[in-house]
Figure (spheres, helix red, strand yellow):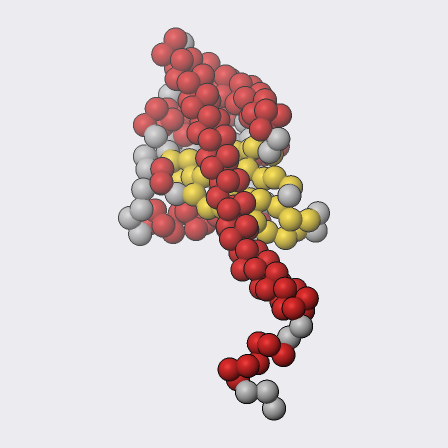
Length: 204
C-alpha cells in the first residue's frame, strides 16, 4: 500500500497532467455556463428595453395626436413590425406574450412562457413590483439548447384606455377593439398588474 503522503507520486507525470487538466475543465464548466447565461441575459435585457421603449413611444405619440381609437390600430400594426425588426437586428426571436391575449395569432404563450407569467403574477401578489420581474435560463428542448428570457410587462396608466375595465371604455373604443381583435381577452386589467411579458429565445 502506498502511504497517503506519497500517493500523488504513484501517478505518472503524464497521467497527473491529464487529471489536473480534467479537474480544471470540470471546475471551469459551471463558470463558463454562468458567464454565457450572464452575457445572454444582458443582451436580452437590452432588446426587451428597446422593444418596450419603441412600442410605448409609437402608441403614446398616437394617443396624444388622435386618441385611443387610432392607437388601437397603431398598436396592431406597428408593434409586430417593431418586434420583427428587432428580432432581425439581434439574431434572437423577440415576441410579446400574455395569458390573456389580444392578438391570438402573435401573443399566445408556450408552456415555458406560461410558467414564467404565472410566476410573475404570484410574485406581484406577494408585493413585488411588476417592472422588476424577469427570468432567464438555458434549457434543453427537442431542437437543442435554448436560451429563454422573459421580462414582465406591467400595466401602466397610459394603457388603461384600451386594456382597462371595459365598463370605463367609450363605445367607440370598444367597437374599435372588437373590430380589430374579435377574440380579444386583454381587458379589465388594473394598474400594476402583469399585462404580459417580452419573451426572447435564442438557439445555442
